[in-house]
Length: 138
Image (cartoon, rainbow, N blue to C red):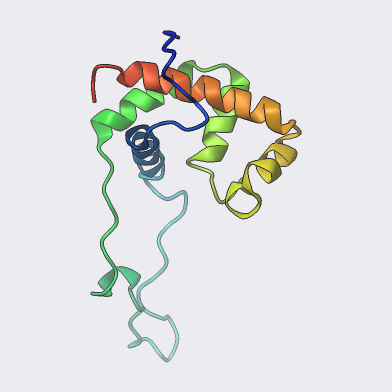
């Protein structure tokens, strides 16, 4: 990792956070592992039409990921050692499932069986490598 004395991985820039969020959205794209639920009921109420959440006019449409940018982050993620890879996945694509959303970094670290310092060090390694991958591409 290139050493830059102005870098503080505890407070990384907003553009880097947005790139990681873009990667997270990209990770969640793809086919469902199961068939989509039926639109019509199979019983006597067969004329019932399932309410579609995406039909709400007051909800903004989801932000589509930029695949070319997400692939850069994904390539970095695939090359990371095991612990930074797991921590980055916990922080972004599995934010809710990992407990990070509900219990913060302390709770996510405990669920992974890590001390908070080790968790944040692994996160710093991962974020530093992603930062390096985007250096000059902003």
